[in-house]
Length: 301
Length: 268
Image (cartoon, rainbow over all chains, first blue to last red; front, top):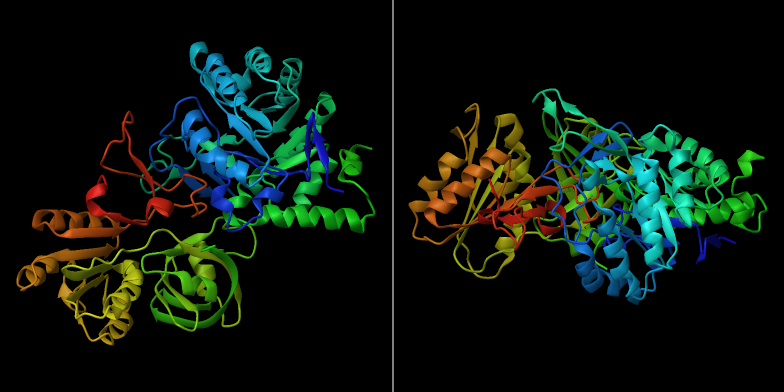
């Protein structure tokens, strides 16, 4: 009933975890049956380990939070050595989110991941700055987005998901660039850029000044973008952005998402993904649908 | 499985002073597997505001499976908690973090300031439980008498020496806890002290420096903004002093690497 397909990737249910909110899976083993999730999208991996930004890295905002973690991660080698075996043993479906500051870095990580078993797909975080192009984010320029997607495409036969930044004038342009570049699916949205100021210290709260806004506060924006992108491309769309309840997940699916990712909600309710899977199934039963696929984009009719 | 997410029922509420509250929950699984210095994350709202859970040191646990937190109602989350009534149900995740390792050699001195007193009652009881006689000193600090009077009664029941200070001099020593440490600890037969400290950052920094000067072991309980408490968000970063190979920074995370750290490992 809950089975969905993302390109060649077949998932038992449409509920995934958003990169950066679920660690490498093990962090949630006491709360969630992690092998039952549609897939786990792990914390973004770069080629070399990255230490991340100085503190403070996070601040709570109205119905949301800002983060400037700075892509702290263990790097691809340690991910393969220390994190992947656990996920493989637990029979989890693993989607590896990757990031880089050059096309070459994205490609090198992909080549390394190709050699490993137990990876179901790669998700490309293209919200990172392209160092060789003056630090403009790959995901905010459609020709740069196309370039990185098509180069990574050449490196792997694994399903390729491109995670889109909402910090653009027209997200459908980026989605089309990803599709043209050979992506099997797009996932959206990444965080919205924002900031907060400490009025007592009279300076930005985050050491990095700006950070990414996530949580329920961004859900209407995310839903609108998913709706638009679902019209603009033929490949599957994965909805992300403030999903905190099963009702939120249903909204995204009705807007055209074939699957969803739960992000910030994992922080304030570590067992939320289990609850959302159950909630979607109950909704389908009550409304007499035999498959979740029947309601994908249904709000458009 | 050693961390739990549970719907806990409030079994007792107390107001210990202006804005200072103590809540007792029935949370058997968490209470049974907890140790002093660990913390819990509480959902401090009915809906989405405040969104994130609030971390609290475990103040006390009982054999019957109850768990206590102590807090000052300052922000939205703590004000919500202060209004809870007996019978209300609240979502708790815990126990989290590493907790204090009680050193078996030497004397013990607990230094708590403000709401940093919270974990010290639990730790003191745990130290006293150990079968051999211990040299235990407790030094507590608060802004004024109203904040600390009730808590002093709880500590005095332990039958060990408790010394205290207040910022305004309304009770005990007029000044800071840090001014009491050396006079008490150096005029003693025991020379090998283990200091366990929780309180405001400037106080812990000062305690760490006093301990460094006297070559005493010192552990501190750190506090930062925290989103998940379980090592996933990587938001609760503090700077450590040792440099890891090839990395200029040594970032540590309060929720998983702590909240208890050796004071010597922290870049103050």
